[in-house]
Image (cartoon, rainbow, N blue to C red; front, side, top):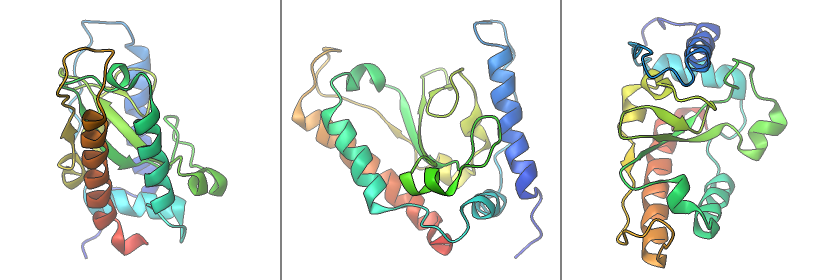
Length: 185
C-alpha cells in the first residue's frame, strides 16, 4: 500500500474549500469552473475511516429508508429530473468540514445522494449551492453514477415502473459503493 497523498484532515479541507467557493459564487453565472482532481480511493477511504471508525459504513437500513423515500416522494420528478445524474457517496462530514457525530452516522446522514445537472454541477445532496464537489470523489465512485430516466414525459406524473426503475438504479449504485467500502465494514 502506498503512502496516501492527502491526510484525512486535508481531504476534509478540499471538500470544505469547494463548498466555500460554491457559496461565494452563488448566482454568479460567470464564475469559473474549478479544476478539481479526484482523490485516490485510499485517501478518501482513510478520511472516512478516521471519522466513521468501526461503525457500519453502508447499512441495509439506510438503503431501505432511502428507497422507501423514493417510492413515496410525491415530487420525485421535480427533485430528480430526467437527464440528471446521481452519485451515491459516503461523506461523513458537513460542507464546512465538521466530522459527523456517532449518532449522525448511525442515522445514515453520511450517505449522500448527490444530484448532478446536465451542466455537470452538483445541485443537491451536499451543499445548498451548485458545486463541483463530486469531482473530488475517487474516480471509482464517480463511475457508479447513473442517469435519471423516466418513461413518462409529464413532470408531475410518475408511474410505478419509473419509481421501481429509479429504486433499482439506486440500489445498484449503493451496492457498488458498498463493494468499494467492504474493507471498512
